Image (tube, rainbow, N blue to C red; front, side):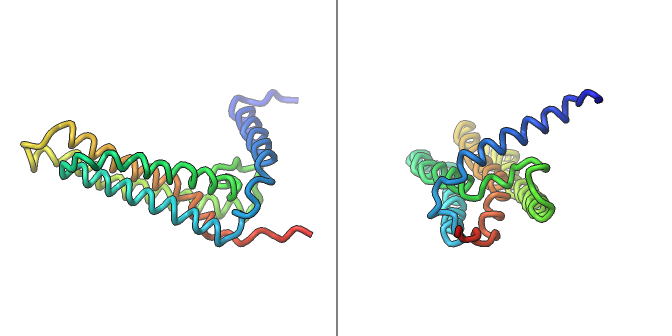
Length: 178
């Protein structure tokens, strides 16, 4: 029997870890696994990311109270994101051998959209960071960096969360238990 290479062993480890997590969370939050509830979670995650981006924009206009808004936004985002990942069974990051052909196709499509979204959304704060000092030379470097960082964080989180949000939104309700 040939010795498995490092990548094969790592893939086996990922499958074991994912299956163990899936087994541990399979019975959690049964009331939140319906399509309606998953969609509410997707809306909560998306809204918190939009507000986080808006906080970055407000920071760029020297609104000194705006950074405080990051805390309530994260207080909504983190639980909503965690619950969404649990009820959608983390299929956006599942290893290939753990999924069937249809799930792999859906996951890959969602990941492709997530990458495109990340690249597109990250351009706005990137351009802001590149050109803010050139256009407004008297602005504070700290304010510019903080505002751009918050906007970039929101863009990266949106792209990273997009596959789970897409799968959570589009998947049908789970089959009823007998």
